[in-house]
Structures are given as structure tokens and as C-alpha cells.
Image (cartoon, one colour):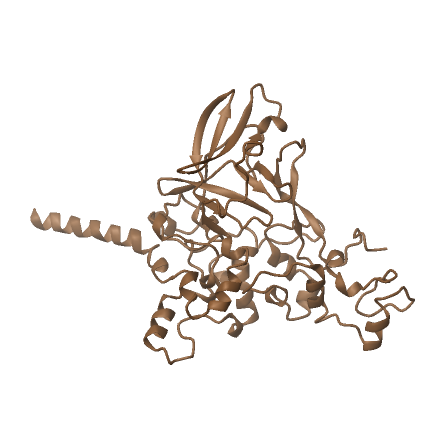
Length: 414
């Protein structure tokens, strides 16, 4: 009998071990971006100003963009839908935190506390709340275009919902890593419920998302301070073009079928071993949100050059988003054929059409300062639409397309 109990106990211990270790040790290899500060202070300070660094953060007044003032902390569903009673949500700041409270027919029906902020807020922010060790999405988000609260994307426009569970693969693109309790998370396929270790969630897309886990790297160089050759870390500059693209594509190639457990992929891996193919791009009906890699890869500029994400975007710092700066990066490949052309064509209308642009510039126009609006215009997403106060129609999320092309409908084409 004693032997039987011992065997059962051993089996139980193995179950607990694998339930934790199949999803846990990965997090133990990750140190968090703050650990990079001591040796890479300038890069850390620069990166800390990027939207990636704030892809997720714990809920606090420092990170939540929306207003909690009484004149701007209420979102009404009656503004958009014809409802028999008053239905609204109030955003509240209390001593214990920040809350969304659903009111129906003059009575408070449900209150949930902000737990996690998703997004830096350049376009929008959404919010999650904790239910035990699960994460669920709050019904109201914040929309930068109108500087107002809005219904969360994909949520109904005539009722308040608090039941959208957040799977691990969703958080995979908003956090550095997480430790999961549920053994079902190790099974590829449709996302099962995720149970997170709240104390071992590393917020934000950080250094280790592009350079791989850093614990071993840090330990080695603490023990060998005179060794200046980076050990146990990934330098994306030394990877092939496709492996560098894979790092960005892990989150910027649309919704793909998971082939491995969440948080399995790391920098330097082949993304195709972890996710199914990127969704195909319909160039006749462009969806600008989500699959930036697919749009870029469908571009002639990409196919006929070595262009990649890092050609235009600085991974270590907040991009100067001025069109002139990005246009100058276009000039790296599309420079005028001669210095003479560069000097005379952009500044006045002329019959000479430069080989780097077919459009005749207007008087006193320097076409080199705005390639972007013509060839990467802002378009409305067909997937993300938000209900905002005072508007009867859903407001689309506007995103600059990454399909580089000539757009006949562009206001500059004439």
C-alpha cells in the first residue's frame, strides 16, 4: 500500500512538474529589458521611447490614455443604437485603481478593474482585466483619432460585454514572455483558455523579443567582464534577411495558425516552424491592418531589392514620423539619375520627368519630401471599426498601407 501511495505521489509530482515546466522555463530565461540598462544604457533609453516598449503595461494613470474626468469619462451605447433603456459605461478612478462600470436603466450592473493596458496609444488603447489568473478584455477602449472612449474592436454596439477571454497567442504579440499554468497551452491548434502566472508576465515588446532570452548572456558577461564578444544573444544584423523579417513577422503578418505553443518562437528561429503561412494579400481589396509583412512582400520594391522592415524603421528608437524623413529613405534606392535632375526637377514645373518619379511636381514643390502619401497612402481598415461618442456611424481605424505601389486614386496623381 505504501509503495502504491509513493507511486501515485510520484506521478502527481510529474504532472505538476510538466504542467509548470512545459510553459514555465522559457520565462526563467528572460530577464526583461531593464536588465539591459547597465551595459546598454543609451540603447535602452532610446528604445524605451518606442511604441513597442509600451505594447503592454500594468494599468496605472501613467499609461492609461483615456480621461476619468466627470465630463469625459462616460461612454453611451444609446448614441449609436436605439435601445429601450439607458446603457452606458463609466470609467472611474478610485483609491484602489481604475474601473469600468456598466450602467443599465440607471443601475450599476457590473464593475471590473483595469489590469493591463494594451497599446502605447498612438492609434488606440484597449484594456484587460484579471479574473483569477485569466485575462479578459474590457468593453471600452480609447481611440486616439477622436481623443475619446470607444467600444472595444469587435464588441457589440448595443450591449455591454465582459466575457472575451484573452488567449496566450494574443498576448504573445504584446508582451516579452509569460508563464502559463495550463498544460493545454502546450498543445498546438485553436487557443484554449490561458492561465497566466501574474508575477511572471514581462510587459511590453522588449529587447529580448529581437535578441532572444538574455539571462544566460547577462550571467556570462558578469562572470567575464573583459570579454567584449557578445555571447548567448542574437544579433539580428548577423542573421539572413528572411530571419530578420521573421522577427517582425511574428507579430506583423496577420492572424496565422499556431503550430507550436504560445511564446515558443524566439529571435533567430524560422517562423514557418511555429506558424502557418501568412494570409494572402488581395491587392485589389487591401486590408491595411495586421499583415504589414504580407503587404510589403507583395510590393515590387521588396521583390526587386533587399528592402526589409529595418530599411525604414529604427528598431532601437522612436521613429521620426515626418513624411520627409521616410521619403529620404525612399531616396536611398530611388535617387535622381543625376545631380542636375535633383537640382532642377523638384523645384519647379518642367517637361523633364525624372526617372525616380513620373509625376510632374507643382511649382516650388520638392517631391522628394513626400513619396509616402502617393505610394503608401493612409487607408481605412475594414477589420477594425469603433463606435465613438456623438457619431451614428462606426469610425474606421486609419492605417498607412505597407503595399508600396502607384495608387491612381491618390490626390497627388494627376
